[in-house]
Length: 201
Image 1 (cartoon, rainbow, N blue to C red):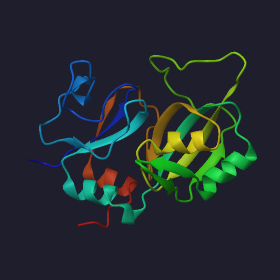
Image 2: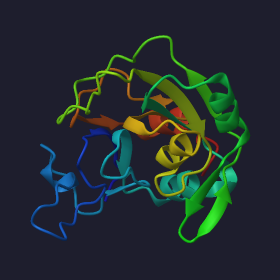
Image 3: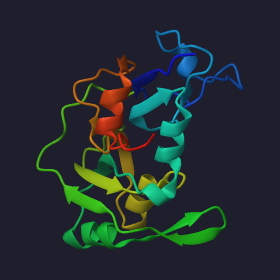
């Protein structure tokens, strides 16, 4: 089979898999697109998270992106309860303690900044729950690791629960103006360059 590369804007509430383990599950098979049977997602976004997800049958690309030794940056837009303090943002940058399974894990240094305005994104369905007396803010957080629900655990650990989480960038590959549920095809040269994998043979 020829190598194929796709990016999608994964919707909120969709599992990052094709198999439906329960009739209530919404999966990648529900996208308005028919993928060949050897196409699989690279990594995952949890059910409550949205945004950029790569699908391919290129095992070299998958292995390179999922190998923690390669330290590929992933960037997220994160809407949180209230306005994070400078102290909280500095803590996110330096590393915080989160629970992973039954153990406490210290996150690696991250990139974190408070955005001056909300990113331009399609409306989420369902919309987030607003509370009249508590403002919200958007952060941009960059990670080179991907523990289970890591971003949510990190913002909660500094006192600002995550309301909406959108992965918008992997290395130099960006969500840009994609719409929720959209599928785009890329060629090998382009995606390898954007992911800085063009030296891999």
